Amino acid sequence: MRRDPFQAIADPTRRAILVLLAMHSMTPNALAEHFETSRQAVSKHLRVLSECELVRAVQSGREVHYTLQVRNLKKVDRWLEQFRKLWENRFNQLDDVLTTLKKGR
Image 1 (cartoon, rainbow, N blue to C red):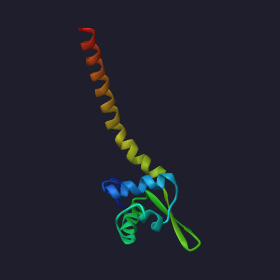
Image 2 (image 1 turned 180 degrees about the horizontal axis):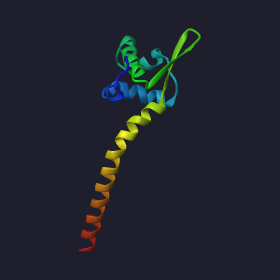
Image 3 (image 1 turned 45 degrees about the vertical axis):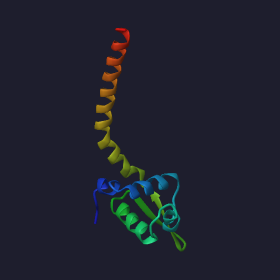
């Protein structure tokens, strides 16, 4: 089942997991140490992130390491870009107004 990546990043715990995995790959146990929740709860979050293809499980001997799939986060970034440009324009307009007000003093 493939889920929407926005569904995955809507949850603060999953966003925190993504931040941790951005630093380096980790096992579910290592990830669970960063949260006040059970390993099973972290595993459920990892399953959702995997279904959205935001993380990937890599078998390494008896352990499973999760890695961030940056390529799929770029889709989210592209969607956010429209809002980033909007806010940049608004801040630039505010900057212009403030500059004009300072000159008027």
